[in-house]
Each structure stands twice: as structure tokens, then as C-alpha cells.
Length: 175
Ligand code: IMP
Ligand code: MG
Image 1 (tube, rainbow, N blue to C red):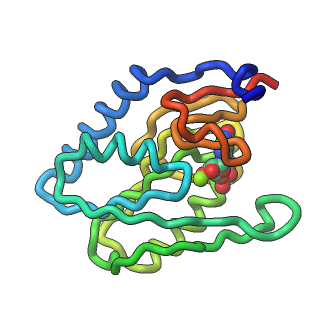
Image 2: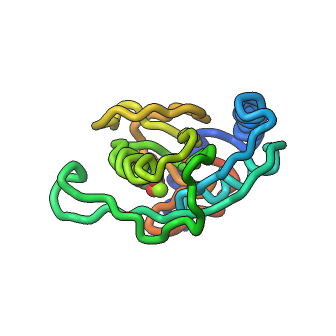
């Protein structure tokens, strides 16, 4: 837990909860009367997604996918593969992909290309966090929790070497 001692709180639980109320209200309004398929990106999105889902009042189905980037060198040259796919046909459906953080943007760009090819009725992105300073490709985030500075963040689903995902707040590691 040495690393935790060097971390600071960036977004506390109350602030997260309040922002989630706002995002859920927007989603509930945008999809009023419609069905939505919520697709969480493993593993990072699990906590944000479950808290958000409790506030969604729509006819909802929940799935998960896992995406991994391969290839050596820069992330730009790596390819993204879906290593665990969703178990449903999304053609003609409203899809909301829920992610923990958009960093370079490559993972979501590739995941969106794949999902878009399956002809959903609508395809939206909901991300808890975004690091705009790190972006390398253009990504439209339809529902965003918070923009964060270019620091390594942990907690609320986000890990450092698979640890700290269980923290109920978002912290950052002092470099
Ligand atoms: P991207 O393809 O560069 O946008 O990668 C985004 C993925 O990298 C996220 O889904 C996270 O899993 C991971 N990631 C990026 N920044 C952080 C961070 O500060 N803390 C923990 N994970 C991060
Ligand atoms: Mg992730």
C-alpha cells in the first residue's frame, strides 16, 4: 500500500455521486421511452457502470466487453482487439458504451469501428473520465463525468498494476 500513501484524492465520493445524477438524468431524458443496451468495458468501467445503472430508469440490458491493445512500439501502431465480446446482436438497438477513462483515444476509436459495423440504431459513448491533454485521435464523448489533468489516476475501477480498483474515490499518484 506504499503507493496509496503517495496518492491524493482528486474526485471524492460525493462529487462523483452528484455528477452521476446529472449524467443519468441526461441519459434518461435522451432515451425516454426507448430501450438501451449498456456495454461496459472491462475491467475499469465496472464501478462507474454499476453506480450509473442504479440511476438509469430505462428498459435496459447490460453486457460487458474486454478490449486489449497489441503490438509493440507506440500505441498508435498497436491494434486493438475485442478479447471478450458481448453476447447479443446490436443491430437496430440503442447502444451506450461505458468506459472508465479516455486517454489517447485509440481503444475507443477501434471499439467504436467494430460496434458501428454491426449496424446499431445509435451508438453513444459514456466515460467517467477524460484526459484531453493525452488525446491522439478525435473521440466524441457523449456523456462525460470529468476532465482530469495528465496524471496517473487510480480508484473507482481504475487500477495501477491491477491494484486500487476498489477505492470508492478517484485519486492520483504524485510523480
Ligand atoms: P486509450 O486507448 O489510450 O484511450 O486507453 C484508455 C485505457 O487506458 C483506459 O480504458 C484505462 O484502462 C487505461 N488508462 C489510461 N489512463 C489511465 C490512468 O490514469 N489510470 C488507469 N488506467 C488508465
Ligand atoms: Mg479500460
